[in-house]
Image (cartoon, rainbow, N blue to C red; front, side, top):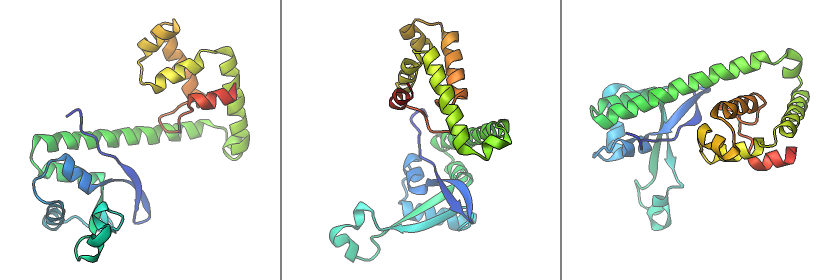
Length: 213
């Protein structure tokens, strides 16, 4: 199911930071015919999902369905459920459908990706000397100096980042820059290590690069 995509966001359950998804979006993605409120309440009751452990819920007063005269009628407020990835995987499995199985695999991949990012971030932090970890301003200054030096030595780096933002492959970028795929991969490796972009940190965009030059 190549088009399956559902947003995750950081939330809090029992004062612990966790990844959550909107159960209503999952309901739509799974193409469940049962009305959402009936579906989610039945699943919670039948399979023992626990509030503040597997999910949280709240009344969405900002819903477009709660404007105008609708807000004066009882039962019009949308109840939103934010559920953990574990609960989402179980709900997918319970549908016993191909789309449910594909959605479950999608969430498993998301979890694996999140674990990999956490491991990478931990390794990056451990590689930074204690003095610099305790002095973020000095660390930022050294990174900026290194980035500026890299841009001076590699003027095509700005073009590389612009093409990368466009979603081009390394081979396509190499063709545009007149470089081999391996040399483009080397540039990407260096820029990633210097903090121009990262899977765990905000990306440096082309406009920000102009400020460094």
